[in-house]
Image 1: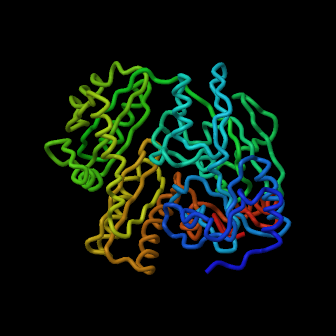
Image 2 (image 1 turned 90 degrees about the horizontal axis):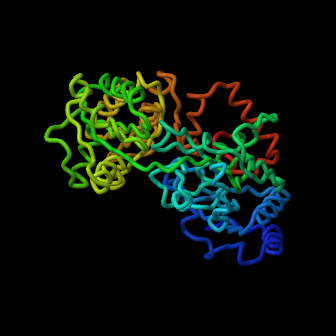
Image 3 (image 1 turned 30 degrees about the vertical axis):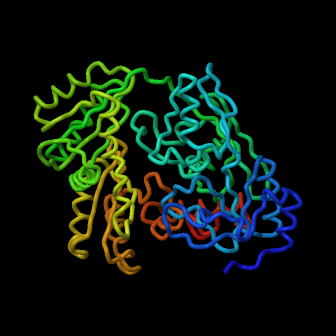
Length: 457
């Protein structure tokens, strides 16, 4: 049962925005309850679908006046519970604030509204002869605003960096309704604090991102993709070092541990290699493709590779990536997904330690690991048929204790939200956490924006 609605706030919102924008009760869609973390269970008190930045400004000004907590929602593809509301919350859903406002072909930039689906923005860039470097598996449903708010990573980080590296400027609305337009469109701008970085990665706790100016890159004419089998992690690291040195336009270097690779090949009925190997890597080269076959031949001769396949068509390339996307893992019972980063040299040692600890305490547990190893980021997919709260907490402890031991990050690209909040101190110092709270207090003194997410104010 929902908490009683704040009637005064509701009437003020309806008067300012219109009944078609402000929804309550059965008009609130079921998707508002939870992101892909599947831990949200409550419908919000009020659900707002703004059509303009002015709508968002008015809504926040009124919510701030009535001290009502606000949760912003994008494509709901997050895995940390950062967009999940409580019954008392007002949700601001961004899906109608969407569209490409400008593509500047001279500067190589795109100005886009926050509710725009990533794949839509990618297609618009491609139609104009450009590449939008931000790319995630959830491209068909995640939104630009959410990508920025969580500083999403993805599969192109090795060449283009994480989301924040591809943003020139943005517009955001503060808790009191103030609109901050920092829509910088130039690469060099050394005029004081870089305000956009306050909001990128803030998970909706400091303001609501409404517009962004994104950097575009020339659209690659050619692309070559290879699937490589290796016997040791040391060989993986050596292959990465050689690829960075020798391959122009290296755009992806994705590592799959044996259990992950075998599970997904079987689930998708894909036959890759004749034998099983401890490690498999996808290498992708964009732009100048001359040299990939020669490079792989040299690595085979040097003994770093056991086998290699080069995609001969887009269909075969898609088949390689279908294994890596691991969509069939979603069918496993009680799946828990972790997103961590550690120094490259420690990644396999960490993986071995976590697998051993988990299999010792939870016989029969499934642990699949893959990652964007070139940027120190791996993902752990853990499943067991019987998992209660105590068991989940113990698994969290095993996973995150190892991260702390190796001085890594408990979240590489998915954010903190609710699920990782209690472990944030594993990766950030008390002084850093206190500074975060001071910034939060300065920008949102009544703590109405996504309260309880990232840390307790």
